[in-house]
Length: 404
Image 1: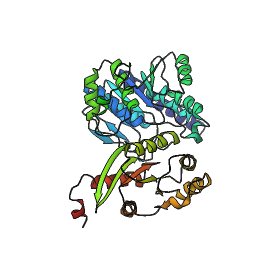
Image 2: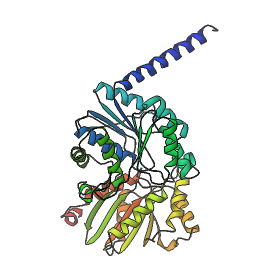
Image 3: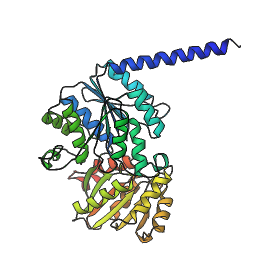
Image 4: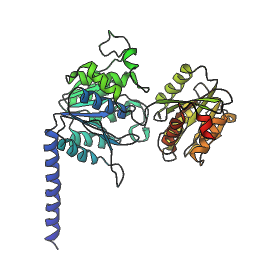
């Protein structure tokens, strides 16, 4: 027995040593490796980059980790990521093998890690990017990366590549990124996504109008700058991005006429930090002034108590909704925190435990006049299901007859 254990240990080390050597060899055969991180917009930027590079003639494989994890093949087709035991950063190794087998010249990977140590491990051992992207820094996942935005920025910097380039549209927490780039002999490029065509990274209103869904200007500016630095023509990159399939968590609009009731539903469920979510809500009110009934629909998660309380406290300082509706799980914690922060409980409505068609009916019942419903907080669970429910009923001129 004393001889068996050392032999097994040697075999184990040799096996994993070979696997890591093989992975490093596969990485070396993919000349462009882009690692995408940030608080908001990681999945969108991964998709934009994959599409832009692909349309620019660079054989590209992309992989998102967001709402519905997908591998994006060089021809634009998508495959679901198989996770028999849940999400694990080791799946980046499997995707790298797929990309190398497909002859990819570029690999665009959305960062999977939250823990600062795992962020460093994911980049330093599994991705070894030539180009890094940090979309932005928001006060999200403070229980893991907090206690504040500076700490979040420092945590995200765990994936800054060595001897590469880091791109970011973050406008406040730049110092940690600059310091990390200096430490790792990389170059920092900060994007200024102005709408002015004279700006270096400006994305015009006309260019933004090419998207069939609501995309953030900063995401497009980031992706275009990376594509340009990799030799892709701007027009070709934009064509690819316009035609790319949006992430299921992307902000979409669905207008329905249901038995004489007009509802504009905005899928903003992917917004779940206080800064991004407030911006989404206030922009929606400005954009749709002709909808006098305003409904804030939150989909909290019981297993994300810290995020639930953050959003509930933040909501108390927003332009108030006529109706604050709570679906999903953890609704009691949201309501209790919001009321403690000064929210009027007469606006509260609870949808937890209802079937999706019942949630829909409750929302429709609020539209005695044209109603704006903005979904926020979390796309998982019933969030995505509700989006699909509205999407299936939007733009149908015979909806009232079909509904009978």
